[in-house]
Amino acid sequence: MNSIPVVEIESSTELKTKTTQTTCPYCGVGCGVTAHVTPTTSGPKVTVEGDANHPSNFGKLCIKGSNLADTLGLETRLLHIQCYAIKTSVNLLIGILQLQRLPIIPAIH
Image 1 (cartoon, helix red, strand yellow):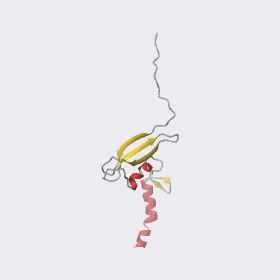
Image 2 (cartoon, one colour):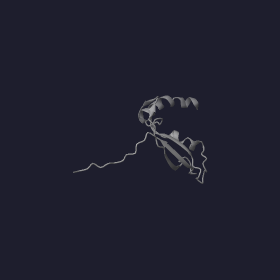
Image 3 (cartoon, helix red, strand yellow):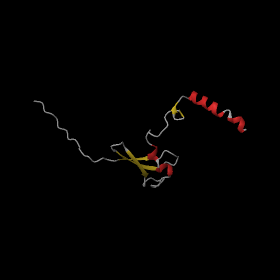
Image 4 (cartoon, helix red, strand yellow):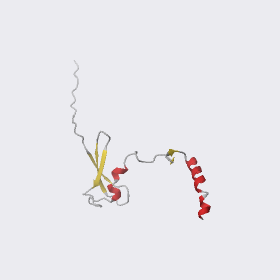
């Protein structure tokens, strides 16, 4: 007779935060950053703080590093060329700029 294997599954309603040590990508200093990712019903929530044990910044972050969490995700990034909030091509955009900007240049100079 075959038996069905029993697997114990961890069950919890508690959301677990994953913490990762990394470095800031903005300048050459390489400040230590601690990133915390917490799953939520609306998607992962990311927070960052300076790594207190890192020798280059000892837990302090500049304005760029302290806002790293705001730069994650594609929701607010421009992924396609747009002109007046309409997705367009490079050639069309160049044509629009030529019509709008080139007549102005001789008048300025």
